[in-house]
Image 1 (tube, rainbow, N blue to C red):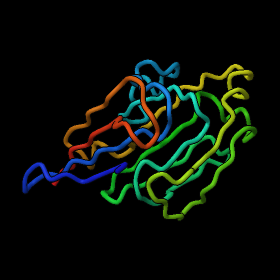
Image 2: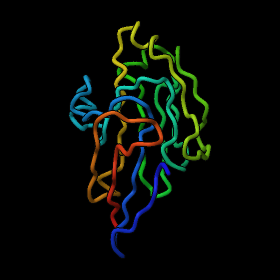
Image 3: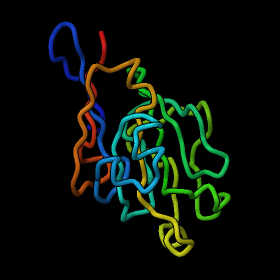
Length: 166
């Protein structure tokens, strides 16, 4: 199961989020962009992808798709909101190499393909492929976030656990 609820006590819930990309999960501090590395966009983790497919790591709703298809925002049924940003400065590609399979308002299920992207096109254009995964509303919805790093397979390995406020 990609995202699951687990009761820790009668008062709190924990949401586990699996990797939406296959590759290597790293701390946000390794992202070569101060807005992400410095936590200005929110807390989270990043993945250096080895496969050009972004999947839904949980059942949820598409809140926003960036016009150039290099990023998407999903809302988890718990209320957590996530930004999945493919590469750094990839907005400059103006959508070339990115194919979105979702639109605003779509309901997605765990494992659904959100965006396919061309890693070689990104690299050849000189853009880092490292991809931040940000919990945009962590301060309002969580008491604690725990991130995991290392090799990850999309849909299998947990990259983030969030303890929800009651």
